[in-house]
Amino acid sequence: MADLDDLREGADFSKEPVRNQTFHIKGSDNLDWGMKDRLSRIFRPSTGKTVMLAFDHGFIMGPTSGLERIDLSITPLIKYADCLMGARGMIRSSIPADSNKAICLRSDAGTSILTELNYNVLIDIQDAIRLNASAIAIMASVGDAATEAITMANICRAVDAGQKAGIPVMGVTAVGKDMARDARYFSLASRMCAENGANIVKTYYCDGFEKVTSSCPVPIVIAGGKKLPELDALELCYKAINDGASGVDMGRNVFQSEAPAAMIQAVSAVVHENLTSSVAFEMFNDLKAK
Image (cartoon, rainbow, N blue to C red; front, side, top):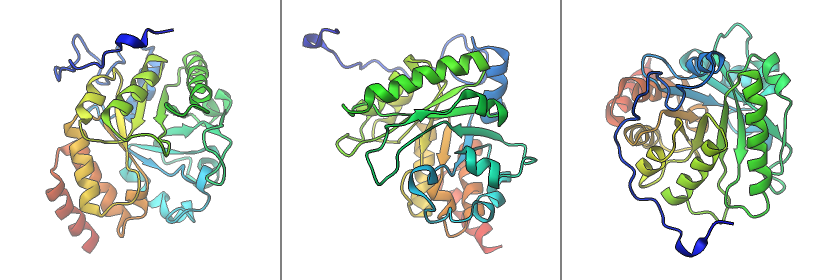
C-alpha cells in the first residue's frame, strides 16, 4: 500500500509540448499501425483535434429530450461531426452505414438513472469489430467506494481486449454526487485511466483545467454536460481547447440546441479553426437564420 503520510500533490505541470513526438495524436507514437489508423479517423490529422457527437445518453436515460428519434435528430448532424459516440443498438438501427464516420462505441452497460449507476458489464470486443468501431468508451467511476474497483477493472479488461483487436479505448470519467468537480479530482481520474491503458480520456472542464491536460499523457476530450446557452457552450469549448483539450464530445449542447446543425458547425469552428466564442456565436446566429 502507498505511504499516505507523505503524499505530495503534483505541482510541476509544464505547458511545454510533448517531446520527441512525431504522430499527430498525443501519446500515440508507439502504438500499432491499426490503432493509429483508427485514432486518425477520430482526430483530424490536419489539427490533431476532434468534434465527437455523443448520443449514447439513452443507454441510461431512455428517450431523453432531443433523442426521441435518432433518425430525425442525429442523422442530419452526422456530416458535421468527426466521430459519432453511441450505443450499438442505436448505431445499428438508426445510423446509415454509408455515413463513413468514425464510431466510438459505448461498450459498457447495465444500469439506469433509476438505480445506482456504474455497476456495468463490458460488451464483447467482437461487437466493436463487427461495427468497425474506431474506439470503445468505458466508464471509470474514480472516487466512488462502491464502484471504483469495478469500473477500473472494466477499463483494464477493455484495454486488454482492445490491444488484441487494435481498437483504442476511451476512459469516461464519471462524477458522483459527492465528488468535487475540480482539477485535483479530474487529474486523478484522467491519469488513472491513462495509466491503465486508455488511449483517450473524456472528462469535464473545470478551473485549472490545464493541470488536467498537462498531467495526462493521452488526448483529453471534454464532455459538454448539461444544456447551456449557446454562447456559454461555445465559451466552454474555447476555454477547454486553449487549456490543452484535444476536442469535445458534445451531446445535449448540440442536439438540444434551438439550431443543432448551426451549433455543431460553430463548435467545430472553435475546435478546428481556433475561432473565439464570440465569433463562433455570430457564426451560429448566421447559420441559424439561413
